[in-house]
Length: 229
Picture (cartoon, rainbow, N blue to C red):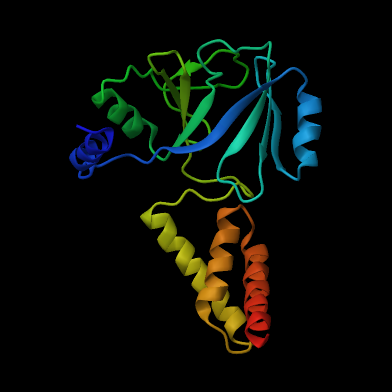
């Protein structure tokens, strides 16, 4: 039996299984000099999302390549936080308890959910008491010791893009429709999809509604000029 046949059969068996979305969004890059690394990646035009120092004194710098749904974390190469919190690759989930349960059902040994409390250097057991986004975690490893960190995000911080499920996409489409209505009232005749596409992509990349509306208008103008050639 070929490997292709085996892969196809496996895909068929799992096609009907409900799966929790786990979005690969952060890859940790170990560096000897964080400031030097930060300058290098900013020099590539990558967006600086955060430069934070945690309670245990470790520093994390997050940058995102233009148009990428995945970011990088620069971590000091000789620093490794306690409690499994320096996992190399991050998976973003909307419901950390549901994601953890699904992994357990697949036979994965997942650590308990934890959060960080003000003034404490070590992880605290349980979800974040206020159910804040970015604040609840759980970790697991593969058989070779490669570690993964689950992070729960329900609502993005400004400029960090969007977490899209059916309900969120519905809200985004309604938002897009409302902003397009204001544009359409004074704009020349155009196809709404040209405006919608640019607006939605801009919002997913972390732009504000106002910035996204400008992207929509510019794309309509680009399409119009191409049609005139």
